[in-house]
Length: 326
Ligand SMILES: [Fe+2]
Ligand SMILES: [Fe+2]
Ligand SMILES: [Fe+2]
Ligand SMILES: [Fe+2]
Image 1: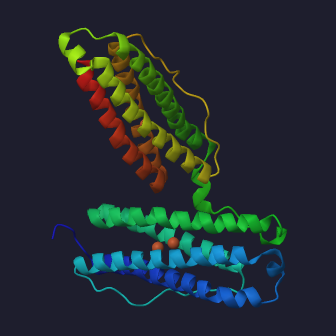
Image 2 (image 1 turned 90 degrees about the horizontal axis):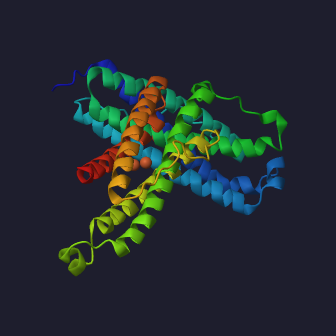
Image 3 (image 1 turned 90 degrees about the vertical axis):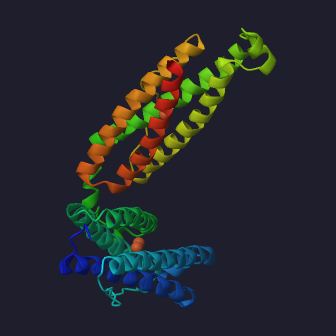
């Protein structure tokens, strides 16, 4: 086997299994405690109604299942690497109210994130790429759990000043400079959306008049018609990028940019459009590589993966325009 697997490495992966089993049990027990909790006389119950219990209870059940699936995937990997997977679990902290559930959840998820960053780094070092990819995927999901629990606590905090949660240390990477960099992507996507939509419409207009050959007349298409269709497809994808990047920024409690940058340029002919779009995609690719490198440096795995996925599509756009530009 190309990967050098040591007992220490298997232990590290087993720590993750213990963590997943522990969280899964924790959340399913909390789910199970809901009915009991709703009948208890605690101050929180005066503020919450049944719907809140139903919603939180449903969510806890969902993530309990998700954590067990994480455990299963890691266990599978351990066996594949020739190790023996553990059946033990981390300490489970249930708690006695929804806000305690959320606090214990924040703690569990933060521990998972710290551990998984370490595993991702180690897996990369020894060349165990499959495990690295697996843990990157899991990492993003743990991050979602963490945010959900934090959201809940923040809502609680508005009523209860004593239960303030301090900003966890790992979030200190989200500085204004970093948001400014991510917002360059937001602005570039806005530019793409505006530029392509405008060109698409203008092209549809050109399409009506510019049938220059017999073939074009017979098939009722011409270059403008073809490009117009392509632009529509691409602009839908840019919309999707815009949505995902801004969603990420908001989730991290930043403010998303609202203006295009560079300014959109439309052009006069189909050929103009293609040259301009080719350039825009090319610049975007450079920018996104920069963002990926920065995210990698900071250890912001989820953002890095998001931009890696988007970059694949931007490169596709580039090559589509590149084909037509010649
Ligand atoms: Fe998990
Ligand atoms: Fe989780
Ligand atoms: Fe894009
Ligand atoms: Fe693009």
